[in-house]
Image (cartoon, rainbow, N blue to C red; front, side):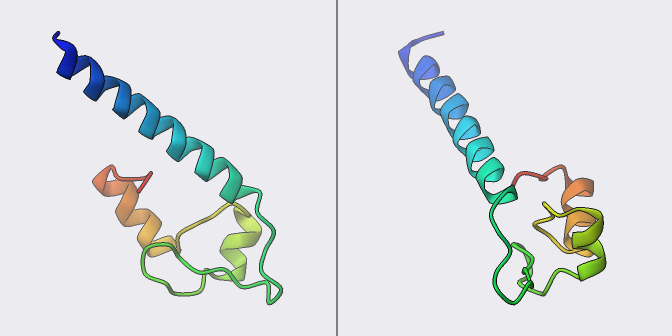
Length: 75
């Protein structure tokens, strides 16, 4: 490994840690006053039934399914 590889690896580790930190903070964020939250992918409201089952949900069922199938759960 050369210095460029080391720097790239360090950047990837930092980016992953920053993403995990952001996701952790977002998952405990209070619901908006209206109680409605929106999918981070399509912008549609996340159904209340889904939020009841998974209060930390950030995507609607359809977008979460697509994310899991494509392997991009952390986008």
